[in-house]
Image (cartoon, rainbow, N blue to C red; front, side):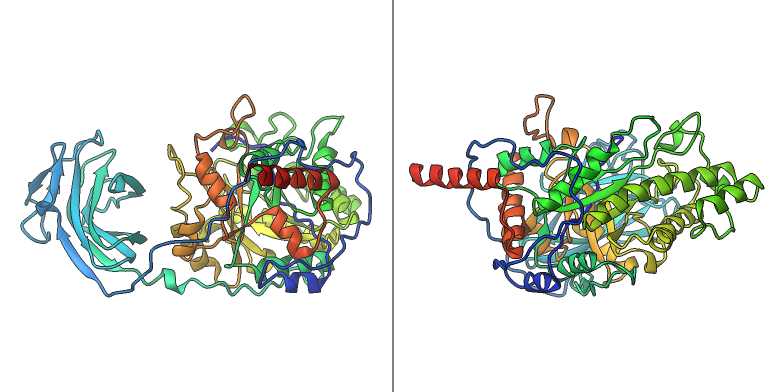
Length: 559
C-alpha cells in the first residue's frame, strides 16, 4: 500500500433529527437547513470546478441471477482432475482420500490442478480443499479466467481443510483451477457445499453513538447512516492537499459527485502550518451539503525521525505506555508528571500531538460540523508505528485518544471509526461507532466484486450492531455483487493518486475501468451527492446548479 497523505472521513451534516428519519426509506426530497456556527477561514468555493456540461449516463438497476438455495456436498478427487505443468499423483502420504493425491507442483507457480465441477444451482458455495504442506504456501484460485482469491495453506504437515467461503457460482459446468505459487504441497480433494454464513449477515446497527454526550448533529448523522445501512452504499473519494481535484474528476467521468469527501489531518512539525486548509476544506464540503471524513495518519512525535512508517522512525510506542491516568489532566499537570519522571518523553510527546489535533477538531465543532473520525488506521499491521509494538500498546493509545477527546476536550462532533481490522486489535466496543477495513488486491483491476468475504469476517467479530464500512480501497465496489452477496457496506472511499488519476490529471483506468466506475456511481444501489442532497432538501451551490441545468439542456438537444 502506498504511503499516504490520507483523506479522512469528516462527516458534515447539520439537519434536524426528523431529516435523517425521513431519509431512511426512499429518495424523496425534504426540507432542512444547515446551521453554521462559525464561518470558514478559507474563501468559500463551489464545485464543480468546470462549468462545462458533463456526459450523462442512465441509471443502472441492481441486477444478479436469481438465487436458488439447495443443499450440496459434492466431492471432487484431485487425482481425477486435469493436471497441468508437471503436477503428478502420489500415494506416499497417509490418510488421503480416493486413489491418491496430487503433488510435485514445484516452486515456480506453473503447475496446477483444474477441477471441472457441476454446479446444481445459482447460489453461494463454500469451497474446501484438503491440503497437506510442511510450509505455508500461497495458492491462487481461479474460476474460469477470473481470479477469485489467493489463500495460504497451513504448515502442520497434515491433511487439513482450507475453506474459501461464500463464492457465488452459476448453475452448470464450471472450471476451478488451483495453483500453488511458491512451494510444493499435497492436494487431496475439493469439496463444494452450499454456504449458510452469508445469510446470517444482518443490518441491525442501532445508530446510537458510544459518546453519550455527543452533539445533536453527530447523533442525527449516525441515525442517517444506520437507517440507510443495507439499503444503499454511500459513495466516497479521497482528496489530497485541501482541494477537490479527485472529486471533480469523478464528476467529469461519471456525471455524479461522491457524498463523502475523505481527507487527512496532520500535526505539523513546521513553524508555518497549512493544516488549516484541510480543516477548511472538510468544513466547506459540509457547507456545500456533503459529508466529510477525516483520518489521522500520524507522523510520530520524535525529535529526530518523525514519520508514519515504523521503519522510518525511532519512536517506540511501548515506552509511552503508562499506568498514570493522564487522559483528563490539564497541560500543567501533565508537564509536572513529565518533569518528575512519572511519564516518559514519548508519552509527553503523544499528549502534545493529541492536544494539537484536538484543536483542529474543535475548529470543526465550533462551525457545527460533525465528522467521521478515523485515527490510527490499519492498527493490526506492524508497518505503522502505532501498530508496531503490539495490540496492547495500540489499544492503550486508542483509549487515550478517545478519553482525552471526549472527556477532557468534550468533542461531541465525532463519529468514531475504528480501522484495526482484526479481532486481536479490537478495542473496547464502547469507544467506536463504525468498524472499517482497507481493501487492496495486489496486481488486480475491477476487483470490487470480491469484498464480501471481508464483510462477513468483520461482522463476525464486531457484531451486527456496528456499522461496517470500507475506509480505503483501490477499486470501487461492484454494486450488483454487493447486494447479491449480502455485503452492502455503509460507505466506501477510493484512495487518491494513481488509484484515480494519471500524471496528466486524467482518469486512470489501471485499477478501476471507466465502465466499472460509471456503473457504480449510476447504480440504484449507490448513493451519490445529488441524491443525498435531495433526501435532505439541500439546494446545490449556484455554480453546480448552473452546470446541472446546462447538462440537462445538452441532453435534450441531442435527443
